[in-house]
Image (cartoon, rainbow over all chains, first blue to last red):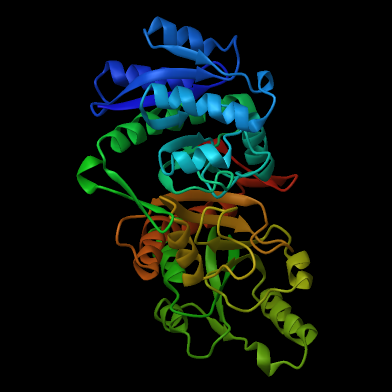
Length: 211
Length: 211
Protein backbone atom coordinates (compact mmCIF):
# COMPACT_ATOMS: atom_id res chain seq x y z
CA UNK A 1 0.00 0.00 0.00
CA UNK A 2 1.59 3.25 -1.18
CA UNK A 3 1.31 6.33 1.02
CA UNK A 4 0.16 9.42 -0.89
CA UNK A 5 0.67 13.07 0.11
CA UNK A 6 -1.69 15.56 -1.54
CA UNK A 7 -0.40 19.15 -1.56
CA UNK A 8 -3.04 21.88 -1.74
CA UNK A 9 -3.49 25.63 -1.45
CA UNK A 10 -7.16 26.33 -2.11
CA UNK A 11 -10.60 24.81 -2.47
CA UNK A 12 -9.28 21.31 -2.99
CA UNK A 13 -11.66 20.03 -5.67
CA UNK A 14 -8.93 17.82 -7.11
CA UNK A 15 -8.27 16.51 -3.59
CA UNK A 16 -12.00 15.77 -3.34
CA UNK A 17 -11.87 13.84 -6.62
CA UNK A 18 -9.08 11.72 -5.11
CA UNK A 19 -10.97 11.18 -1.85
CA UNK A 20 -14.10 10.18 -3.78
CA UNK A 21 -12.10 7.76 -5.94
CA UNK A 22 -10.52 6.28 -2.81
CA UNK A 23 -13.96 5.85 -1.23
CA UNK A 24 -15.11 4.02 -4.36
CA UNK A 25 -12.03 1.74 -4.02
CA UNK A 26 -10.67 3.00 -7.32
CA UNK A 27 -7.15 3.49 -5.94
CA UNK A 28 -6.54 -0.03 -4.63
CA UNK A 29 -2.75 0.34 -4.53
CA UNK A 30 -2.56 3.46 -2.37
CA UNK A 31 -4.13 5.63 0.29
CA UNK A 32 -4.02 9.35 1.00
CA UNK A 33 -1.81 9.47 4.09
CA UNK A 34 -1.58 13.24 4.55
CA UNK A 35 -2.84 16.51 3.07
CA UNK A 36 -0.32 19.35 3.21
CA UNK A 37 -1.56 22.91 2.71
CA UNK A 38 0.44 26.04 1.92
CA UNK A 39 -2.35 28.13 3.44
CA UNK A 40 -3.85 27.84 6.90
CA UNK A 41 -7.38 28.64 5.69
CA UNK A 42 -7.50 26.45 2.59
CA UNK A 43 -10.89 24.78 2.32
CA UNK A 44 -9.06 21.67 1.18
CA UNK A 45 -8.08 21.16 4.85
CA UNK A 46 -11.78 20.90 5.76
CA UNK A 47 -12.27 18.28 3.08
CA UNK A 48 -9.33 16.28 4.44
CA UNK A 49 -10.58 16.46 8.02
CA UNK A 50 -14.06 15.41 6.94
CA UNK A 51 -12.48 12.37 5.28
CA UNK A 52 -10.42 11.58 8.38
CA UNK A 53 -7.10 12.31 6.67
CA UNK A 54 -4.24 13.86 8.73
CA UNK A 55 -3.34 17.42 7.70
CA UNK A 56 -0.24 19.57 7.91
CA UNK A 57 0.14 23.27 7.20
CA UNK A 58 3.41 24.49 5.76
CA UNK A 59 3.65 28.20 5.05
CA UNK A 60 6.66 29.29 3.03
CA UNK A 61 7.02 32.74 4.60
CA UNK A 62 7.31 31.21 8.05
CA UNK A 63 10.68 29.83 6.98
CA UNK A 64 13.69 32.11 6.61
CA UNK A 65 15.18 30.22 3.67
CA UNK A 66 14.20 27.78 0.94
CA UNK A 67 16.53 25.24 2.55
CA UNK A 68 14.70 25.37 5.88
CA UNK A 69 11.34 25.13 4.14
CA UNK A 70 12.55 22.16 2.07
CA UNK A 71 13.81 20.44 5.19
CA UNK A 72 10.43 20.85 6.89
CA UNK A 73 8.58 19.51 3.83
CA UNK A 74 10.97 16.57 3.42
CA UNK A 75 10.60 15.76 7.09
CA UNK A 76 6.82 15.53 6.84
CA UNK A 77 7.05 13.41 3.67
CA UNK A 78 9.57 11.15 5.38
CA UNK A 79 7.50 10.90 8.53
CA UNK A 80 4.46 9.64 6.57
CA UNK A 81 6.70 7.38 4.42
CA UNK A 82 5.32 8.99 1.29
CA UNK A 83 5.76 7.16 -2.01
CA UNK A 84 3.74 9.55 -4.19
CA UNK A 85 3.25 13.32 -3.99
CA UNK A 86 0.24 14.82 -5.77
CA UNK A 87 0.21 18.54 -6.48
CA UNK A 88 -3.47 19.44 -6.45
CA UNK A 89 -3.49 23.19 -6.94
CA UNK A 90 -0.41 23.70 -4.76
CA UNK A 91 0.75 27.30 -5.23
CA UNK A 92 4.17 27.17 -3.58
CA UNK A 93 7.23 26.30 -5.66
CA UNK A 94 8.65 22.82 -5.15
CA UNK A 95 12.44 23.22 -5.18
CA UNK A 96 14.72 21.12 -7.37
CA UNK A 97 16.08 19.67 -4.15
CA UNK A 98 12.71 18.13 -3.27
CA UNK A 99 12.09 17.12 -6.90
CA UNK A 100 15.38 15.18 -6.94
CA UNK A 101 14.40 13.37 -3.73
CA UNK A 102 11.16 12.25 -5.37
CA UNK A 103 12.15 11.81 -9.01
CA UNK A 104 9.15 10.61 -11.04
CA UNK A 105 7.17 10.38 -7.81
CA UNK A 106 5.55 13.83 -7.96
CA UNK A 107 2.41 14.19 -10.08
CA UNK A 108 0.85 17.47 -11.18
CA UNK A 109 -2.36 18.23 -13.08
CA UNK A 110 -2.22 21.12 -15.55
CA UNK A 111 -5.42 22.56 -17.07
CA UNK A 112 -4.39 22.47 -20.75
CA UNK A 113 -3.12 20.06 -23.38
CA UNK A 114 0.63 20.42 -22.84
CA UNK A 115 2.67 21.73 -24.69
CA UNK A 116 -0.07 24.31 -25.37
CA UNK A 117 -0.71 27.00 -22.75
CA UNK A 118 1.84 25.88 -20.18
CA UNK A 119 5.07 26.99 -18.58
CA UNK A 120 5.88 30.13 -16.59
CA UNK A 121 2.83 32.29 -15.86
CA UNK A 122 0.26 29.75 -17.05
CA UNK A 123 -1.71 28.75 -13.98
CA UNK A 124 -5.34 28.87 -12.89
CA UNK A 125 -7.61 31.18 -14.84
CA UNK A 126 -4.66 32.60 -16.80
CA UNK A 127 -4.52 29.35 -18.76
CA UNK A 128 -8.18 29.50 -19.73
CA UNK A 129 -7.98 33.21 -20.58
CA UNK A 130 -5.11 32.44 -22.99
CA UNK A 131 -7.09 29.55 -24.50
CA UNK A 132 -10.07 31.82 -25.20
CA UNK A 133 -7.81 34.60 -26.47
CA UNK A 134 -6.19 32.24 -28.98
CA UNK A 135 -9.58 30.95 -30.13
CA UNK A 136 -8.76 27.24 -30.04
CA UNK A 137 -11.70 24.84 -30.29
CA UNK A 138 -10.18 22.14 -28.08
CA UNK A 139 -8.39 22.40 -24.76
CA UNK A 140 -8.12 19.88 -21.95
CA UNK A 141 -5.95 18.74 -19.07
CA UNK A 142 -2.64 16.95 -18.63
CA UNK A 143 -1.37 14.87 -15.73
CA UNK A 144 2.42 14.72 -15.70
CA UNK A 145 5.41 14.00 -13.53
CA UNK A 146 7.11 17.07 -12.12
CA UNK A 147 10.71 17.73 -13.08
CA UNK A 148 12.96 20.81 -13.00
CA UNK A 149 11.22 22.34 -16.04
CA UNK A 150 7.90 24.08 -15.37
CA UNK A 151 5.15 21.82 -16.83
CA UNK A 152 7.92 19.99 -18.69
CA UNK A 153 7.97 16.57 -17.02
CA UNK A 154 6.92 13.26 -18.58
CA UNK A 155 3.25 13.26 -19.59
CA UNK A 156 1.09 10.53 -18.06
CA UNK A 157 -2.47 11.19 -19.28
CA UNK A 158 -4.24 13.82 -21.37
CA UNK A 159 -7.89 14.44 -22.12
CA UNK A 160 -9.45 16.91 -24.55
CA UNK A 161 -12.36 19.22 -23.67
CA UNK A 162 -14.37 21.33 -26.11
CA UNK A 163 -14.32 25.11 -25.98
CA UNK A 164 -17.86 26.38 -26.58
CA UNK A 165 -19.38 29.62 -27.84
CA UNK A 166 -19.90 32.05 -24.98
CA UNK A 167 -17.34 30.46 -22.68
CA UNK A 168 -15.80 32.68 -20.02
CA UNK A 169 -12.51 31.68 -18.36
CA UNK A 170 -14.53 30.62 -15.30
CA UNK A 171 -17.01 28.48 -17.25
CA UNK A 172 -14.22 26.86 -19.24
CA UNK A 173 -12.17 26.22 -16.09
CA UNK A 174 -15.10 24.40 -14.52
CA UNK A 175 -15.72 22.27 -17.64
CA UNK A 176 -12.03 21.31 -17.85
CA UNK A 177 -12.12 20.32 -14.16
CA UNK A 178 -15.30 18.28 -14.46
CA UNK A 179 -14.59 16.59 -17.78
CA UNK A 180 -10.84 16.14 -17.49
CA UNK A 181 -8.96 16.98 -14.27
CA UNK A 182 -11.23 15.13 -11.83
CA UNK A 183 -11.15 12.05 -14.02
CA UNK A 184 -7.51 12.02 -15.07
CA UNK A 185 -5.94 12.66 -11.69
CA UNK A 186 -7.46 9.71 -9.77
CA UNK A 187 -6.80 7.48 -12.81
CA UNK A 188 -3.13 8.52 -12.95
CA UNK A 189 -2.74 8.05 -9.19
CA UNK A 190 -4.29 4.59 -9.40
CA UNK A 191 -2.01 3.61 -12.30
CA UNK A 192 1.03 4.86 -10.39
CA UNK A 193 0.11 3.00 -7.21
CA UNK A 194 -0.31 -0.22 -9.17
CA UNK A 195 3.17 0.24 -10.66
CA UNK A 196 1.78 0.53 -14.17
CA UNK A 197 3.67 3.69 -15.17
CA UNK A 198 7.29 3.53 -16.24
CA UNK A 199 9.49 6.37 -17.50
CA UNK A 200 12.12 6.11 -20.24
CA UNK A 201 13.87 9.04 -21.91
CA UNK A 202 11.47 11.57 -20.46
CA UNK A 203 8.39 9.72 -21.73
CA UNK A 204 5.96 7.51 -19.88
CA UNK A 205 4.80 4.07 -20.84
CA UNK A 206 1.54 2.84 -19.37
CA UNK A 207 0.82 -0.86 -19.03
CA UNK A 208 -1.88 -1.61 -21.57
CA UNK A 209 -4.17 -3.80 -19.50
CA UNK A 210 -4.83 -0.91 -17.14
CA UNK A 211 -6.73 1.49 -19.41
CA UNK B 1 -22.70 27.89 -55.54
CA UNK B 2 -19.15 28.72 -54.39
CA UNK B 3 -16.20 27.80 -56.58
CA UNK B 4 -13.43 26.04 -54.67
CA UNK B 5 -9.76 25.76 -55.68
CA UNK B 6 -7.83 22.93 -54.04
CA UNK B 7 -4.04 23.42 -54.02
CA UNK B 8 -1.95 20.26 -53.84
CA UNK B 9 1.63 19.01 -54.12
CA UNK B 10 1.54 15.28 -53.46
CA UNK B 11 -0.68 12.25 -53.07
CA UNK B 12 -3.82 14.28 -52.57
CA UNK B 13 -5.55 12.24 -49.89
CA UNK B 14 -7.13 15.39 -48.45
CA UNK B 15 -8.30 16.30 -51.97
CA UNK B 16 -9.82 12.82 -52.20
CA UNK B 17 -11.65 13.38 -48.91
CA UNK B 18 -13.15 16.54 -50.43
CA UNK B 19 -14.08 14.79 -53.69
CA UNK B 20 -15.73 11.96 -51.73
CA UNK B 21 -17.65 14.44 -49.57
CA UNK B 22 -18.77 16.29 -52.71
CA UNK B 23 -19.93 13.00 -54.26
CA UNK B 24 -21.94 12.30 -51.12
CA UNK B 25 -23.53 15.78 -51.47
CA UNK B 26 -21.99 16.86 -48.18
CA UNK B 27 -20.75 20.17 -49.58
CA UNK B 28 -24.08 21.53 -50.88
CA UNK B 29 -22.91 25.15 -51.01
CA UNK B 30 -19.83 24.66 -53.19
CA UNK B 31 -18.05 22.64 -55.84
CA UNK B 32 -14.39 21.96 -56.55
CA UNK B 33 -13.82 24.08 -59.65
CA UNK B 34 -10.08 23.50 -60.10
CA UNK B 35 -7.15 21.59 -58.63
CA UNK B 36 -3.83 23.44 -58.78
CA UNK B 37 -0.63 21.46 -58.28
CA UNK B 38 2.85 22.74 -57.52
CA UNK B 39 4.30 19.57 -59.02
CA UNK B 40 3.70 18.13 -62.49
CA UNK B 41 3.73 14.54 -61.26
CA UNK B 42 1.56 14.91 -58.14
CA UNK B 43 -0.79 11.94 -57.86
CA UNK B 44 -3.44 14.40 -56.73
CA UNK B 45 -3.73 15.45 -60.40
CA UNK B 46 -4.79 11.90 -61.30
CA UNK B 47 -7.44 12.00 -58.60
CA UNK B 48 -8.76 15.28 -59.99
CA UNK B 49 -8.86 14.00 -63.58
CA UNK B 50 -10.63 10.83 -62.48
CA UNK B 51 -13.26 13.03 -60.82
CA UNK B 52 -13.59 15.22 -63.90
CA UNK B 53 -12.16 18.29 -62.22
CA UNK B 54 -10.04 20.74 -64.27
CA UNK B 55 -6.37 20.87 -63.27
CA UNK B 56 -3.60 23.43 -63.49
CA UNK B 57 0.09 23.03 -62.79
CA UNK B 58 1.99 25.96 -61.35
CA UNK B 59 5.68 25.40 -60.65
CA UNK B 60 7.38 28.10 -58.66
CA UNK B 61 10.81 27.74 -60.22
CA UNK B 62 9.38 28.32 -63.67
CA UNK B 63 8.76 31.92 -62.62
CA UNK B 64 11.63 34.36 -62.26
CA UNK B 65 10.09 36.23 -59.33
CA UNK B 66 7.51 35.83 -56.59
CA UNK B 67 5.53 38.65 -58.22
CA UNK B 68 5.24 36.79 -61.53
CA UNK B 69 4.28 33.58 -59.78
CA UNK B 70 1.66 35.40 -57.69
CA UNK B 71 0.23 37.01 -60.84
CA UNK B 72 -0.10 33.60 -62.51
CA UNK B 73 -1.78 32.11 -59.44
CA UNK B 74 -4.15 35.05 -59.05
CA UNK B 75 -5.04 34.85 -62.73
CA UNK B 76 -6.07 31.19 -62.44
CA UNK B 77 -8.07 31.90 -59.28
CA UNK B 78 -9.74 34.84 -60.98
CA UNK B 79 -10.45 32.85 -64.14
CA UNK B 80 -12.32 30.16 -62.15
CA UNK B 81 -14.04 32.83 -60.01
CA UNK B 82 -12.75 31.16 -56.87
CA UNK B 83 -14.44 31.99 -53.57
CA UNK B 84 -12.52 29.53 -51.38
CA UNK B 85 -8.95 28.24 -51.59
CA UNK B 86 -8.13 24.99 -49.80
CA UNK B 87 -4.48 24.17 -49.10
CA UNK B 88 -4.39 20.38 -49.12
CA UNK B 89 -0.73 19.55 -48.65
CA UNK B 90 0.43 22.45 -50.84
CA UNK B 91 4.19 22.81 -50.36
CA UNK B 92 4.78 26.20 -52.04
CA UNK B 93 4.59 29.36 -49.98
CA UNK B 94 1.50 31.51 -50.48
CA UNK B 95 2.69 35.11 -50.46
CA UNK B 96 1.15 37.81 -48.28
CA UNK B 97 -0.02 39.44 -51.50
CA UNK B 98 -2.25 36.46 -52.37
CA UNK B 99 -3.33 36.09 -48.74
CA UNK B 100 -4.54 39.70 -48.70
CA UNK B 101 -6.53 39.14 -51.90
CA UNK B 102 -8.31 36.20 -50.25
CA UNK B 103 -8.50 37.28 -46.62
CA UNK B 104 -10.31 34.60 -44.56
CA UNK B 105 -10.96 32.71 -47.79
CA UNK B 106 -7.94 30.40 -47.63
CA UNK B 107 -8.26 27.27 -45.51
CA UNK B 108 -5.38 25.04 -44.41
CA UNK B 109 -5.31 21.78 -42.50
CA UNK B 110 -2.44 21.28 -40.05
CA UNK B 111 -1.72 17.87 -38.50
CA UNK B 112 -1.56 18.91 -34.85
CA UNK B 113 -3.64 20.65 -32.21
CA UNK B 114 -2.50 24.24 -32.77
CA UNK B 115 -0.76 25.98 -30.93
CA UNK B 116 1.17 22.76 -30.26
CA UNK B 117 3.66 21.55 -32.88
CA UNK B 118 3.07 24.27 -35.46
CA UNK B 119 4.85 27.18 -37.09
CA UNK B 120 8.07 27.28 -39.10
CA UNK B 121 9.54 23.85 -39.80
CA UNK B 122 6.53 21.90 -38.59
CA UNK B 123 5.10 20.15 -41.62
CA UNK B 124 4.45 16.58 -42.71
CA UNK B 125 6.22 13.87 -40.76
CA UNK B 126 8.24 16.46 -38.82
CA UNK B 127 5.11 17.29 -36.85
CA UNK B 128 4.49 13.69 -35.87
CA UNK B 129 8.16 13.11 -35.03
CA UNK B 130 8.02 16.08 -32.64
CA UNK B 131 4.79 14.78 -31.10
CA UNK B 132 6.37 11.38 -30.39
CA UNK B 133 9.59 12.99 -29.14
CA UNK B 134 7.62 15.10 -26.63
CA UNK B 135 5.64 12.07 -25.48
CA UNK B 136 2.18 13.67 -25.55
CA UNK B 137 -0.76 11.30 -25.28
CA UNK B 138 -3.10 13.35 -27.49
CA UNK B 139 -2.47 15.02 -30.80
CA UNK B 140 -4.90 15.82 -33.62
CA UNK B 141 -5.56 18.17 -36.50
CA UNK B 142 -6.60 21.78 -36.94
CA UNK B 143 -8.38 23.47 -39.85
CA UNK B 144 -7.70 27.19 -39.88
CA UNK B 145 -7.79 30.27 -42.07
CA UNK B 146 -4.43 31.26 -43.49
CA UNK B 147 -3.01 34.65 -42.55
CA UNK B 148 0.46 36.18 -42.65
CA UNK B 149 1.62 34.17 -39.62
CA UNK B 150 2.61 30.55 -40.28
CA UNK B 151 -0.17 28.36 -38.80
CA UNK B 152 -1.37 31.46 -36.96
CA UNK B 153 -4.72 32.23 -38.60
CA UNK B 154 -8.18 31.91 -37.03
CA UNK B 155 -8.94 28.33 -36.00
CA UNK B 156 -12.09 26.79 -37.51
CA UNK B 157 -12.20 23.18 -36.28
CA UNK B 158 -9.99 20.89 -34.19
CA UNK B 159 -10.17 17.19 -33.43
CA UNK B 160 -8.07 15.15 -31.01
CA UNK B 161 -6.44 11.83 -31.87
CA UNK B 162 -4.80 9.42 -29.43
CA UNK B 163 -1.09 8.67 -29.56
CA UNK B 164 -0.60 4.93 -28.94
CA UNK B 165 2.26 2.75 -27.72
CA UNK B 166 4.51 1.72 -30.56
CA UNK B 167 3.50 4.57 -32.87
CA UNK B 168 5.98 5.58 -35.55
CA UNK B 169 5.69 9.00 -37.22
CA UNK B 170 4.20 7.24 -40.27
CA UNK B 171 1.60 5.28 -38.30
CA UNK B 172 0.62 8.37 -36.32
CA UNK B 173 0.41 10.49 -39.48
CA UNK B 174 -1.98 8.00 -41.03
CA UNK B 175 -4.18 7.86 -37.90
CA UNK B 176 -4.34 11.67 -37.71
CA UNK B 177 -5.35 11.79 -41.39
CA UNK B 178 -8.02 9.11 -41.07
CA UNK B 179 -9.50 10.18 -37.74
CA UNK B 180 -9.14 13.94 -38.05
CA UNK B 181 -7.94 15.58 -41.29
CA UNK B 182 -10.23 13.75 -43.71
CA UNK B 183 -13.24 14.48 -41.49
CA UNK B 184 -12.47 18.05 -40.46
CA UNK B 185 -11.52 19.45 -43.86
CA UNK B 186 -14.74 18.58 -45.76
CA UNK B 187 -16.75 19.70 -42.73
CA UNK B 188 -14.97 23.07 -42.60
CA UNK B 189 -15.36 23.54 -46.36
CA UNK B 190 -19.07 22.75 -46.14
CA UNK B 191 -19.53 25.20 -43.24
CA UNK B 192 -17.68 27.91 -45.16
CA UNK B 193 -19.69 27.38 -48.34
CA UNK B 194 -22.92 27.67 -46.37
CA UNK B 195 -21.74 30.98 -44.88
CA UNK B 196 -21.72 29.58 -41.37
CA UNK B 197 -18.23 30.74 -40.39
CA UNK B 198 -17.60 34.32 -39.33
CA UNK B 199 -14.36 35.88 -38.09
CA UNK B 200 -14.05 38.53 -35.37
CA UNK B 201 -10.80 39.62 -33.72
CA UNK B 202 -8.85 36.74 -35.18
CA UNK B 203 -11.29 34.14 -33.89
CA UNK B 204 -13.98 32.19 -35.72
CA UNK B 205 -17.58 31.79 -34.74
CA UNK B 206 -19.50 28.86 -36.18
CA UNK B 207 -23.29 28.93 -36.48
CA UNK B 208 -24.57 26.48 -33.93
CA UNK B 209 -27.20 24.67 -36.01
CA UNK B 210 -24.51 23.45 -38.35
CA UNK B 211 -22.56 21.08 -36.15
